[in-house]
Image (cartoon, rainbow, N blue to C red; front, side, top):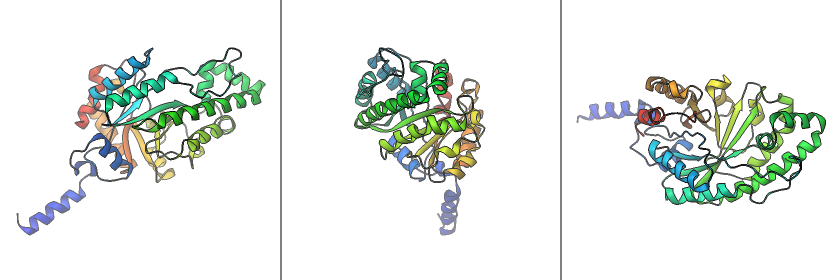
Length: 319
């Protein structure tokens, strides 16, 4: 090749989108490079839904099968085992040293099955969500109004129990982060003032307690007016639903300039999205987020998604 043509070809390569330039990477290499904002062959991706299986063995087997079938770059482990209920009133709780033993068993089985080929990420639902599962949304709101200190005490206990769980989880080889789910940073759940009093302190404390991790997701069901509550939280990745929240990804990038952003895919309408729809969502999100970007839905995709519907995204990415 003539020198001039060679230089032109190099210049053209450097101008191409980052995900077109690098050689094919392993799951782990691809994630590491995205977290560092380096060049990629394609964006790392993952997605998930609830399996709702009764035993750790079934849960682990289905999680591994899902990862292998759809070639996800990150194994996001769903948490469907319940927090232990007290014998008396739901809010009269004690700190649990190991609140989710079945989940610990499942994570260890998944670790064995992966053999170090991909990163694992555990799911933890925030204390407000756990309180609702122990009782109901209506009961939690009633306690907030009638006996707010009792509610705060219960949330404090749940927080410490979940910190104990997270520390057990992060000691498992291959688990490099927590998807910490905050589903109540929106007006359908509570006012900004109530979020600031009854949820933010516990959410922030959990993330501070687990320390620095490679891949913890701050997973937000969020609306405008709540996003600023999360500045300064200890998490390297922010994950939210662009379509449900209505918050442009460029706005999230401006507010969280150094974070990795995970999202872009419409989880609500996932089953009806064509390959071209998915491509447009991927490219639009990647452009707004920049290099520190993971392609994911804003939350779990529908549990009744068919194999063909689930395969559409990894097939598009040539995963």
